Image 1 (cartoon, helix red, strand yellow):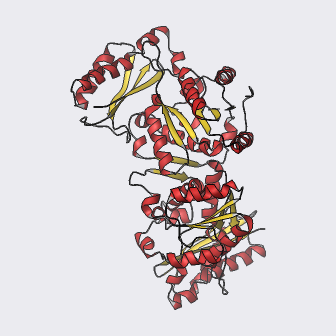
Image 2: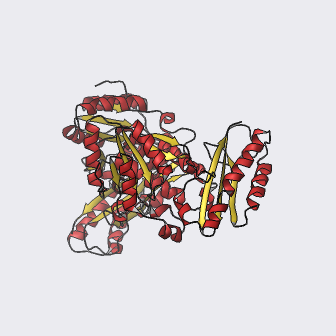
Image 3: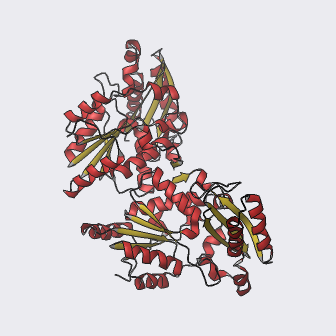
Length: 283
Length: 283
């Protein structure tokens, strides 16, 4: 592979077109860069399943609802390219903002109910930005398979909904969350935690484990399970709980009583760092 | 070609995939059926430029803002298939509504300012339905070229905007409006006019011609040109003028004074039949 990232849509398309001639299966791993082992796991899965792997690195402005979160988002492009190279990725596509959004752009992709609750509620416009940029990337790369992490479970549900509703000819592949030894889900935002906040950041994972344990021993009330989660998180004084929810795994709408597989999901804040995590529980 | 229309997305995709193996250029002509010489002109252009031509026949429910207009819309499928066959179309894709929209569908494509005025103003939700179904058809057919009529000029501008903003890898081809000998633009809705209404339906075309003539002799005020158009239309007592507008040909926003190419566009009603027409004037 070339260590020089591809910067333009035209060049990316030409490179993919050539690869497709050989009938290679094309895989894409869309990322916002600041790559870590979670992204690595997506790339390894793509590398195993596809003849040609494109990693996109683009910090998409339209999915940030907080300007500070956007400007603080890490952008270590050189390290990201080396990270991709080490995983035998074929192309890193790292377009500038102006290559992705013209000044005249005015189109958005809106997904309904699946984008309403949890992250959709806390981050207005976030999933519109996600759906729109993923639609663009799917049209630019024209992949056979696209890889996304379970870590962003609602994002995955939104993208699955969009792909089905708009008939994108792509298979969405879900890859399990990668965690630190203490259980913290890997996130590019973890690097911004102070040492003390890093220690307390496991609160959300602990809350998920506690709620799961209660479900597996028979608890079926969402109200009670949210109480259990809040109790766990209250043990970590630096942690602010934004939400802890139990949702239908496909529709991502809150459930009151558990009668089938359920996605437990939450968001917390430590200082100005916001973290999310989730867990699928089958009963 | 097969005279049997293709009914499923899976079969359509398989047929296009086979055609693509021969490196044929794939063209699509999206229609709502009730085909007339205007559609014929799109097909002939596609046939001349493409190795493989798909005509889609689908009365898209989401773009109708009036239930009666949707239920009254003609659906002569057998005649439409024969029409396509006579023009050497390779495939007629005529999916049922359930094949295009699942009960769980909740995604829409929204185009901004270009969809706000004129038809966008008079038909709330219309262009959202158009943009969404065209996005679906582009993903289903994966054409190299897509053919649309100048008759629906704002629709064309909306689709061009969407294709650019979402990076659909397709070339949009604009085909001139086909008219009856007296100037009336062909439309599937013309068949629903009474003989007297048919006679008066030329009012809009006459108004467009009158406004154009005034521009070509120096008039630059949109207000004055709208007055001229309204005066022409007032001569036809059965005609109700919905709007007559002068718009930027790309952005489709109203202009006050003319300083470059301008799209004149209007909508009228005759009984319960609504007709539109337009004309590009360069100064």
